[in-house]
Length: 224
Image 1 (spheres, helix red, strand yellow):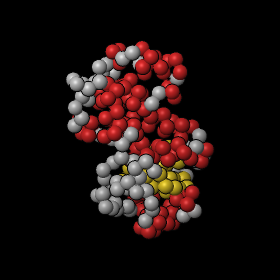
Image 2 (cartoon, one colour):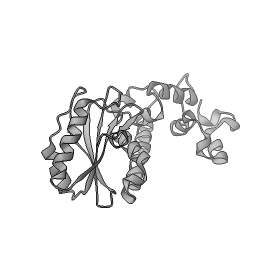
Image 3 (cartoon, helix red, strand yellow):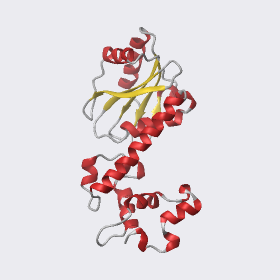
Image 4 (cartoon, one colour):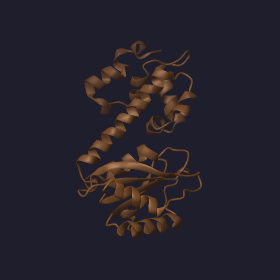
């Protein structure tokens, strides 16, 4: 069953136009992207299955091409549309963080970090480089490791900050296990990088630990 086969009152597009996108459930928004189901499964049922399989809309939109390719009913066009929506979300948040100091929108900083690295199956260490007004210059993944650990070299972080003429940074790394609680090693690394960057007059504003559906801020925890 496609969207056009649904009763008029149940069609997500008509509901969105009449009441606004906030009135739609996640499966209805996803059904708008999918448009059609697959043999034996309507579009709404397919949307619900995908949300369950990827643990929510965020997990689905952050799924990699190989993960999406394994799902029956998601052909190249549908996978491309999901990827396009994800990229638009990243670019929109990046633009907002580039236009205003990151401290003006701490929730968006967390959301941006989650969009970038939250659902990776391997651990990465990334840095948000900020200008003198604490606006985003760029977020770059500098190190990639195994699920268990990542080797982070302070000298490389300092070099990349100087190359971008950054005045401050927000550190971020993910915990593929899903638990966002910082470890003793995370705390030690934060202080090591803070000391190294202070030598070149670059401030560490925060360190974000990104888990599945949760982002922990060192600044909010008083750990900086």
